[in-house]
Amino acid sequence: MKSTDNEKAVSHTSIFEKQLLHKKIVAQSTLKQRKAKLKKLLRAIEITYRKEIQKALFDDFGKSPAEVDLSEIYAVTGEIKYALRNLKYWMRDQAVSTKLAFIGSSSKIKYEPKGNVLIIAPWNFPINLSICPLISAIAAGNTVILKPSEHTVHASALIKRMLNDLFEEAEVAVIEGGIDVSTGLLKLPFNHIFFTGSPEIGKIVMRAAAENLASVTLELGGKSPTIVDETADVAAAAKKIMWGKFLNAGQICIAPDYVSVHRSQVNAFIAASKKTLLDFFGEDTANSLDYTKIVNDQHHLRLNSYLEDAKSKGAKIVHGGASDLTTHSFEPTLVTEVTADTDLMQKEIFGPILPIIVFEDIHEVIDTINSKEKPLALYIYSSSQKKINHILKNTSSGGVCINNNDLHFYNHELPFGGINNSGMGNSHGKFGFMAFSNERGIYRQHIPGAVEWLMPPYSQLKQKLINLTIKWF
Image 1: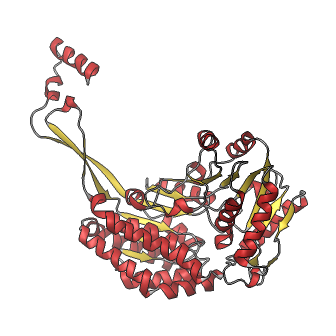
Image 2: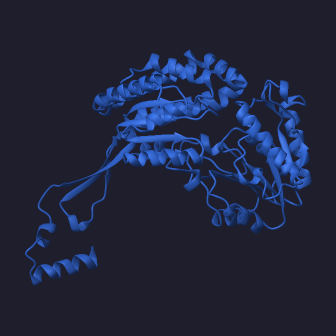
Image 3: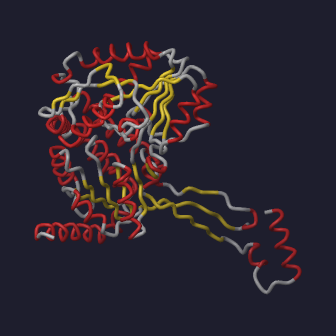
């Protein structure tokens, strides 16, 4: 290990230990104090740093200010405002019923912070996916070390500067760096780790957490399927799918990964999709101010290899396909006749390529979905409630949108998260607060209860009482 790496490890440990000493103070913070912190963060995102955030994300991968506002700023400000409205209720002890057999007692759940937490954020929405879990962690009363992605250097540097201005290092600290930094942080005995990224790295995080028996929230990804059946409004479906897929140039964990279209609708769907893409971005997407770039060479080359692999196996590009490694522009691309053995159908695409699969019978689609790992999201376009119910009953996924896509992410009343390969645990709203909280069960005896009658030594009378308890309580 290089001396600089040693110095980094010492620095990280020092920050962790500083937060370890401070976590009791943070844990005992009041509702008023936590709301004050959230309001301070809200003002920073909404007003003080908004223009700088827009510029940082444009510099990192060409995101337009409007797209930054919708997918980064609004996601964060909405999360904070929702927390401010509801935190009083989340923090309250929750009374629960107690069995009649325990007469003379009461029970409640107390939500207490998990303690020292680590948030490892991804590059695709660097503000949104760094700050939203931070909001939940602050609301729950934790100390936080946040590790933003090294792939979006401008956004990560801004996050560090902003949070350094807002918080003491003993409460919230930002540590920049690459894989070596993440590896070093994962060795520390955090109480909880919140990770957003790929399933492959999620497994590494979970193994590291197991060494310290830390709990985890894993927001991963996968191949989120989209279904357009014979009863769907094709024009409306195409417009929503093109937006949900090509927002952020498809670099979204919940983007429609592939779309299965009923044979009777496929020609109309392709035509409507092409028209929508032209309406959205024009003919020259490389110079469109409304279309995002690919984040770096590595991901650009990966996407090109996926496309070349599909073409070599008979796939046809019906829209787009051009890209420029120098500028990281990659056209929105629609591909048909994609076989199951291609990279496009075996791996999460995470980019602006959409395979269009034709189906005759919905059972074909369900079999395809169930043959893969459980996805983070499932999207269904249909006007038949019977068909919708059938798909829901016979598939499993983290979340579902019906006649839309992506938008479940923004509803704070819904848990956001995956299942198995697509994640573990939930975030957003109260679900995020609970992810960073320990639900502490508290039982209190007020007056002598019936349980004392069932303690040793056991007589025939006590055995009869035990029998009655088993039968009736």
